[in-house]
Length: 124
Image (cartoon, rainbow, N blue to C red; front, side, top):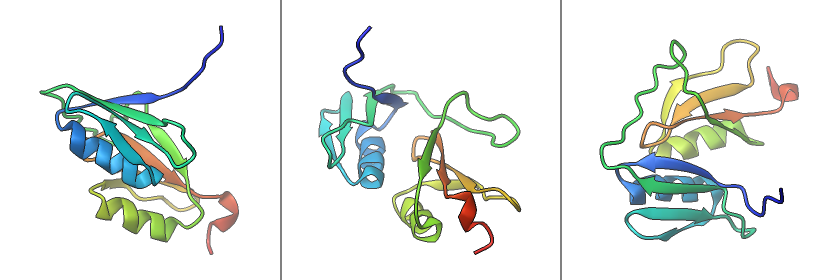
C-alpha cells in the first residue's frame, strides 16, 4: 500500500473556529467550506482537517479519563508556545508535573493535544 498523504481529521460543531485554531498553531491557512476544511501548512502539507459534526463537543476529563487519541506537538520554547495556544483559544487541562516535559491542552472543540519540549530543557 502506498499512502500518499496523512491527515488527522477532527470533528467539530464550528468548523471555521476549529480549523482557524489549528491553522494558527501550524502557521498555515484554513481552506474549504463550512462542512469540511483542511489546514495547509507553509510547507504545503496538510497536517489536519476539520469536518462538520453539528452536535460535537469533546469533554475531556484529563487525566482521569484521557482521550483515545491526541496530538503531541514538539516546541522549542514552551513558555512562548503555551502563551500562543492560550491566545488562540486552547484550554490548559494539565500542566507538567515535576520531571515531565509536556503540558496537556484542549482545542476550542475540546480535542486534547500536548505541547512537548526536549527533556534536556527540564529544570532550565
